[in-house]
Every structure is written in structure tokens, then in C-alpha cells.
Amino acid sequence: MLGPPDEEGVDMLSVLRHYDLPLHFPKNVLHEANTIAKSRADNQPSAQECAGRVDCRSHNVITIDPDDAKDFDDAICIQKQGDQWLLWVHIADVSHYVLPGSALDIEARKRGNSTYLVDRVIPMLPEALSNELCSLKPNVDRLTKCVEFVLAKDGHVVSSKFYPSVIRSKRRFTYKEAFAAIQVPPNNETEQMLHDAHAMAQKVRHLRFKNGSLDLDFPENKIRLDEHGKVLRIERIENDVSHQLIEEYMLLANEAVAGRLMGLNRPSVYRVHESPKEKRLNDYREDVLSHRVPCGNLTHRPEVQKLLSRLDDLPIGPALKIGFLRSMMRARYAVEPLGHYGLAKTKYTHFTSPIRRYADLVVHRSLFDKVELQVGIAKQIADHISTTEKNSSDAERDSKEVKLYAYLKAQLVSKKPQPYVALVTDVRNFGFFVDVPDLGLSGGVPLSSIQDDFYVFDPVTRQVTGRHTRKVISIGDTLVVQIYKVDSIKKQVDFMPVPQRGKPTRSDDSEGQSRRGPQSRDPKRPAAPPRKPGHGHKRASQQPKKRR
Image (cartoon, rainbow, N blue to C red):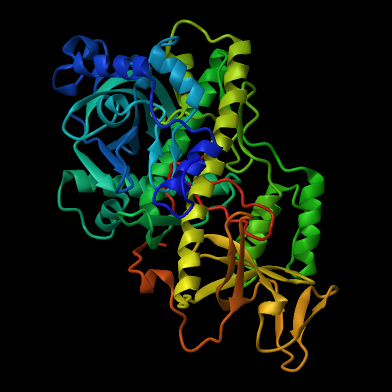
């Protein structure tokens, strides 16, 4: 018995129980973490620990993270050298503190990753490490594993090398601060470095898409709660240039480390994203063609890129883009380096987030430790963390849904439902489905809820038409809806059209939502593909950090 469903805190407790997420660390794990932290004066590594590492403390190292982040596991620095550039990607050296077989290691492996619920974080490591000793906070010494790149002026990687290092971050930027700083002339050396890093990141990004990477980013909706756990506002976070800056350098590091491990022929864990099944691509292609959108052979990557680019300029584009995501395989972990379809990389792993992902911790050990990981154990780890990642992703989605359901129910009770812009994504004989970007939800619109006419479904054109008004509703249409029915037990949400009187009120206007840039989501964690359309199916919103 958890308590009354509407009692404060019970909704999140139900999510925690359903997905078997732990509320606390075992005492021996906390004791081990606290012992490690307390043995370091001023919560910094000792001189003996820094000895033998490449000293990068004089470099203009910075971090860029979400405004509410506390675990900073990556930092960058870039310097011009002749007609080339030196890039340092520093990653928190968690493996220095979390040793194989220790209580911390056993618990981290069990959890597999941190879980970011709407109202809390279930961390993989205790805060003494995740938020303190391992976190790359400004103005303190921190141990890192570094990938140093030599980049050509067009963004090509000339060479890379890997080594343990020690840094002292000069400044912690939030994404908002970094974005603002990039828009104006630099005021100091650190901001000049940020401008240089941005310019080079855009060149690296251009090369990535030129080499076949797919642009599959969607904006993220960040739910902000009040002190009672109720929805205060919903913020729309776009994938602007500040996110792209960090994303491109993390992708470079992940690719370089995978190539190094493959060259050394060391057993490890790779991040793999297999190509979609040909049948699913062909089925999707038929769907695209049925909407009179030109579409080539999608088994050829250039044709996929052409289609995605074309969809960006069409009203029906977002709906069809979601359909493409549904045709793709789910990314996972494996001991075989099978490459990454979405990123168009033949060599790829996860290296850049060891504070929150066990996979990255394993990769750090594979790259730097002298004792090799056994293939059988690596496969067990890969299978397990693939499972824990999916469990966390489902829990994160459900934690958002329970808050949104309560928020929408309150609108019904108050009889003051808010209007939202919605995109029609599918049409059936009983109604149609819509995607509501301002809520990050998908739901149904039953034909019985439409009050201005009686609508009839045409299975050939896949549209509904009003008998008297002759109004037509089809896939790709945009309309204004309000909440009609919520069933939080069945996880079903129904909307109904509302008469459009002037410009519709968006959640960011009515609730003080802040908007920034052109993804989103914090680029560090990419998003799982959206589910198949259906009542109550939430549109895939990106996680606090991308799971690429």
C-alpha cells in the first residue's frame, strides 16, 4: 500500500516501485564513497595522484551543461596551432576511484546507469563521487581521462592520443550562458576559446552529415514542478549551437576511443545501432509515397538524407519523420563493434559519461587498465546495461506522464482547459491521432468529440470529412485541441478540437515557459524512438542527456 493516488509523492513512489528503482544506496557503498572523499583534502586529488599525469591545469578548460546539472563529467579546451587546432576532450576519471570488484563497482554495475525522473535523479554513484570528487567543477583539481585531437582547419581529425590527465576547469557554462556568449563578441580569453570551439564544432558537424549522419533530433520538453510536485510550467528546449558544440566533440571522442580499442583488439563494450530491417523501410517508403512525397530507395543512405531534408520543409514532415524513427532499431550495447547506423559511424562506443553510465566506466578500464576484460563477462555486462537503460528510459517516460496526466486532469476539473497546437499523425475510422509538442504527448481525437459536424472516414485517402461543412482532416494537418478525457490507469489521453479564436495560447506563453535557440535536449543523452501511435502513447521526448 503506497497511499491514496492523489496524495503528494505517491505518484512518483509508484513509478519507483514499478520499475524497481532503488531509493537509497546500501550502507557499505555509502561508507566506501565517503571514505574515498574524506581521504582527499579539500575534496581534491592528492599530489601523489596527480603525479605521472599530463598536467592540463593551465589550459582554458570549460564545461557546458544544463542549468540544473550537478554531475559534470566532460570538459573541453581548444587552441590554434599553426594552421591546425589542438582539441582536448577531458572525461571524469571515475575508474581511478571505482575499482573493479569494489562495493561501489558492484552497485554501479547493478544499476547500470543513472535514471533521470521528472522530480529526482536516481544516481549510479553516491553523491560524494558523482556530484563532488568526480564532478569537473570549476576552480578545483580533477583527475580526467583525455582524448587529445589534432584537427585540420576544415574539421577533419588528423590524429588523436589518449592519456590520464589533471585539470582545473576555468568556468562552468550553462547551455543558456554558452548560447548567449556565442551570439556576441567575446569579452575575455575564455569566451574567445568558446567562440573558437563553436566555430570548429560546426565544421565537424558539417563533415558528419556530409559522411551520412542522419538528422533525427527532436526538441525536448522539460517539466518544471512546484514545491508540491505539480506541473509549474513546461519548457521547450531546442538543439541549439551550444548543445551541438558539446555533442560534436563527445561524438569525436567516442569514435576515436572505439577505433583505438578495435586497433588494440581488446574486449570491451560498444554502442551499436544496427540498420533498419529492409521490410520496415519499404513499408515506411510506401507510407511516404501515399502522401505524394517523393521517396527513393531508403536502403541507400543518401536517399534517407534527402527524404529527411525534404520533410523539414513540408507540413506533414514532422509526422512522417516520427514514422521513420519507428522503423529504426533500438540502440544497444554489445561486445561486437557493429557500428552506429544513425550516426553513420563504423566505430563507436560510449566513453564520455562514466559518472552516469556503467558502459563508459567499462570502456575507460578497457582502454587504460593493464588487466583485460574477459569476453564472456563483457557480454554479460553489455546485455545487462542494455536492459537497465531501457528500464530507465521507460521509468523516465512514465514519471513525466503521471505528472502530465495530473496536470491535464486538473484542467478538466477546473473546466478551464488550455488550447494547444497539435499535429495530425494518423487517421482511423474511429478518429485520428495527434502529437502535441507543447505537452510532449500524443493522444487520440475521437470523432464523437468533434462538435461542429459529423465526420466520415475515407480509407482510400486516409482522411475524415465533415458531411455538412465538407471540412477535411488528414495526416499533417495542424489544429488546436484541448484535453477531452484522461485515463491514467490505462494511460489513455484523448483530445478534442476547439474553435480557433485568434492565435492559440501556447504553454510557453501562458505558463511563462522559456524558449531558447533553434534540443534540445541536452545533447549528451540522445532519445529513444517514439512509440507506435495509440491512445496515451507519449511522443518520444529526449532525455536530459542523449543516449547516442
